[in-house]
Length: 147
Picture 1 (tube, one colour):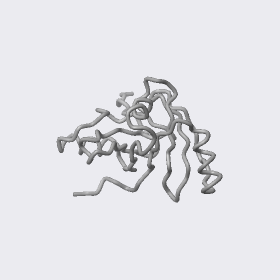
Picture 2 (cartoon, one colour; picture 1 turned 90 degrees about the vertical axis):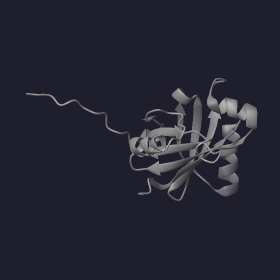
Picture 3 (cartoon, one colour; picture 1 turned 45 degrees about the horizontal axis):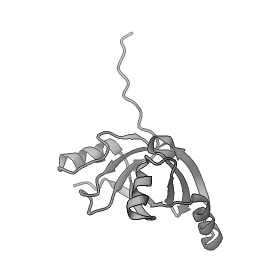
Picture 4 (cartoon, helix red, strand yellow; picture 1 turned 45 degrees about the vertical axis):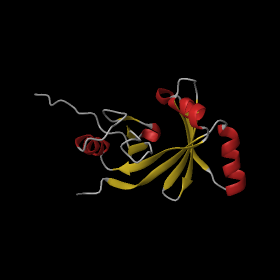
């Protein structure tokens, strides 16, 4: 079987205070934030810190209904999920579903950094929430037109 995972895209860490956590990474580790974004659909603000060709994604909730807010309330700060780069998010998600895996997203959706993403349930992946990440947005299917 073909390996659908290209590399680790990011390791996501849920934090309560994004500004102080970013400052710690910068001041102590010399890291630099290469991207910041509010993802309103997920109720989070993220700061991405480059580490080689991957990222540390620091996440904080922007509202109390955010899954990250729920995570912080139940588990506290720490590892939230691991993102794997894939060439085709839809194909990787279908492979998980075809194998009987539980998924959070039934279809790929827009993610931060102009990516296409889908989440796989932790019960399928050894207790870890997994995000499938395709660089660039997948092109929408366009119906053929006759001229």
